[in-house]
Length: 263
Image 1 (cartoon, one colour):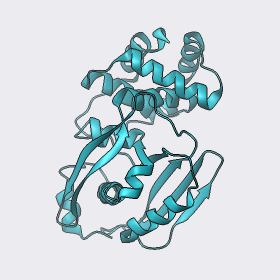
Image 2 (tube, helix red, strand yellow; image 1 turned 60 degrees about the vertical axis):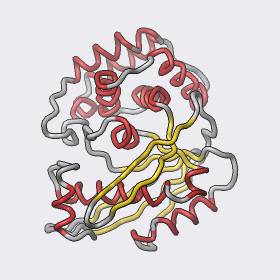
Image 3 (cartoon, helix red, strand yellow; image 1 turned 135 degrees about the vertical axis):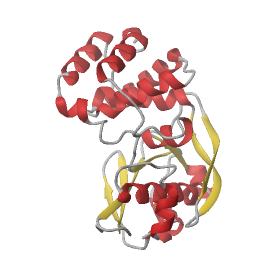
Image 4 (cartoon, helix red, strand yellow; image 1 turned 90 degrees about the vertical axis):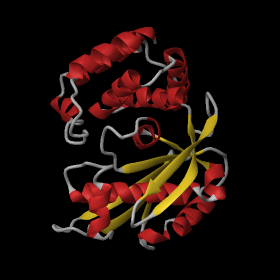
């Protein structure tokens, strides 16, 4: 999809082991510019999740990420947003699949990589259509990409870091992905985080999605079980930036003492 020389150029910013991952990363960068340069989409969507964390707050991004997580921030039909997304992402072609659930609309584009061996990659855009609220408010963060294939800049609508990490803490409890533990640990190490606000946001979101907030004891039991699971522990190591060293047990100790024990 992208000529080889531009993929090689982008390797400086996305040093992932596979050429397809580098190409996908550049596709994500352009997609974000195309989406948030559009006034209608910028007004109706906010960027969150691990990709938002690493592309906006933890640059250079510490790990590979393959999806774009968005939130529909105003109540209303999702169809106009999906129509506008198709128009703004025309560079990906017209073929896409849309999966609808109670909570989300997921849009998937497929493309073939340029460099041999040619493989089919995807760009998944997941839009949460229920959480039309924010705890700490939204903010606009400048975002820029410069590459021979595509250059552009825009202001991206997103959450404050404590709210992003509050939803990340919810993800750590709800699913089995070790990258959630890494993201929390890395952010606490690199950024000045107000833990009280993070916990406030976590409780608001998990109460909204689950109807209740687990106690600290319940969260610890949840984590003890996950820390014994090889799949959970190994999830992060294939997507880390090459020079980053990481220890699951040290990370859990930090998150347990800094956050979970204070819930």
